[in-house]
Each structure stands twice: as structure tokens, then as C-alpha cells.
View 1 (cartoon, one colour):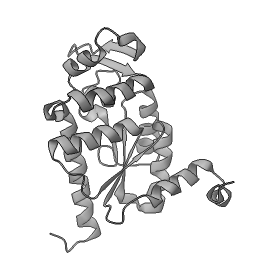
View 2: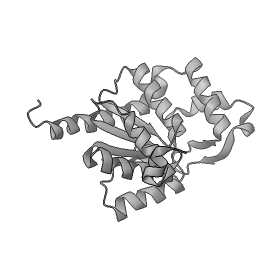
View 3: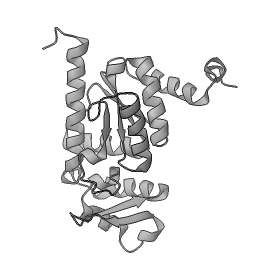
View 4: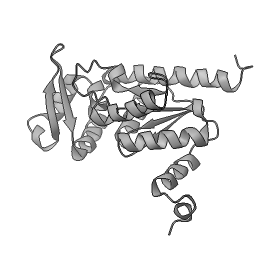
Length: 212
């Protein structure tokens, strides 16, 4: 039996404490994301675009609800200003945003980020894969799309397609990106990283007012 589980009485909180242990001491900003693919995309974009995630530590979770819980817990354990959460703009993500922004008064677009900030959702989900060019996704899906798709919906105004990938699809897409993606395919991800870099820099100024 896990000692941490006995101490805190919650397997989820014990997992959060383990995540906290992994945070490097020079971290200025904790970014809580819904899953491992979000973290992989951010790290790949950072490398290809040469936009370092200096002082930024990414915490992967198991969906929007888990991300909201871990963000709340880490905020208490690590310090309120230094924790932000990045969510899908879909139904579970909106539930988490409702909790954090409307009920708990987290700051929208600075403490609670969502992919809808960089992709016009048009009442259609905006998920991590929507930040890649449609041409790239079409190339990945090819003629064997059905095995990977959970949904495929066209946005009414832009005409762009939203495609939802199942777990096998996400894993396969990561492999596809490693072999085929160029820096230009991560252009929108660069905007996400720029936002995180700005938040991390602002955090440095908050933590050390003498920094310039």
C-alpha cells in the first residue's frame, strides 16, 4: 500500500504530490495539460521552432476533470500565481473552465487557457490536433481514417474540419509527426508557447521584483 495514499487518503492527491516532486527547482510556471499528447506537441514545437520552455514545467493529466483537480491541488502546494491549466475547448473542458473561472474565480486566458484561444471553435470542439494544418491531418488520415476517428465535423464559417482522434490515433499521429512534420506545421503551437513564455516571464518579475 502506498504510504502517500495512506497519508493523504486520496490516490489522485497522492499522484499530484508525486507530480510535484518532479518539478525542477528553477520552475517559474507549471502548465497543467489534459494528457501526454499535449505535452508531446508542446515539446516538439519548442524544439522545432527553437522556442525554449525555460522555467516552464508541463504536468500531464488524464483528461479535463483530472487536469482541473491537479491544477487546484498544485496551486495550493506550489503557489497560486505559478500554476496555469491548458484545456481542450470541448464539453469536458468547458465544464472544467466553468468550475475554475466562474466558481473559483481563476483568471480566464491567463490562469485558464484553452485551445479555443488560438483556433476559432465556431461552436465546434477545438482540441490540440486542431492546431495543426488541415493538410497535415488529411495526409495522416489518408484512406484509413475510420480506425482513428472519434468525430469529424466541419466548422460552419471557416469550412475547416475538426477531427477527433481516439487513443490509437493520437499515438499514431505522434509517430507521423516525428517523421513528417516541419517547423511550419507548428506555427500555431508557437503562439501557445509564446503565451506561456510571457506568463513565465511575468512570473519571474512577480517572484523577484529586482529582476530586470
